[in-house]
Amino acid sequence: MVELNKVFLDEEDPDERPRSLLREIISFAGYVVFVVLFTYIIVTYVGQRTEVVGSSMYPTLHDGDNLLVDKISYRFTDIERFDIIVFEYQHEENVYYIKRIIGLPGETVQITDGNIYINGELLEEDYGYEVMESDGLAAEPVTLGENEYFVLGDNRNDSTDSRDPRVGNITRDIIVGKAFVRIYPFDAIGFLKHQ
Image (cartoon, rainbow, N blue to C red; front, side, top):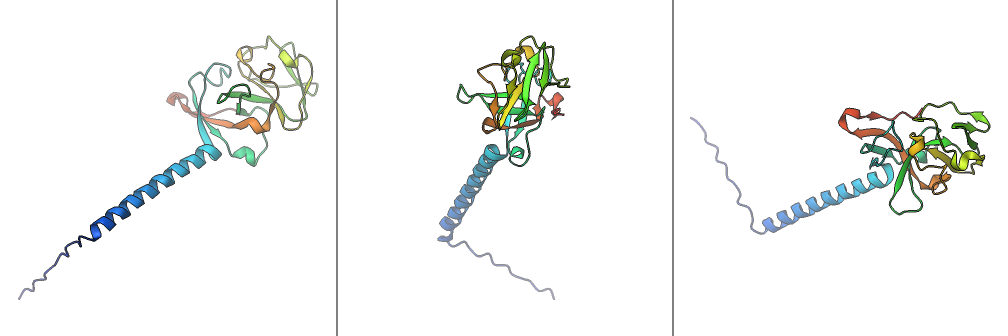
């Protein structure tokens, strides 16, 4: 003899429907708040996407390149020579520059006949696109103070950088972070050359 099992479906209590809907709404709102908060923390303290405008870092970076900027590592490590950094331009709100670190705190930088000298010694580097035509402020020795840096664009003859009085030496507190990877255009994705 076959035994039949009967299954009874409980009908939903009409009073439970509003509570269930309220729980769903609260759960969804909590999820949205979490995503917004997480995104804010990442963009504010960890990293951000930056688009290159102009040709001052050519040939390393091109107009329209999209980069990721690491905003956290300089909290734990020192800024090094040849790092590519993003910093706030002090004379215009919400304007940021991207340049390469050349001089470090306490060093004396001078540019003579297109050559860079650090503490009187020729700096061996091959980032410059061409020989500099203008020595700017660095025609005379520039001694960097504590937490001051001297920056140049790789396209030395088409770059507003520490040679220009509008930029001058930059201080650590205006450095947003280190540009470390290109994410667009897709055919040029990769880590940036720093050393």
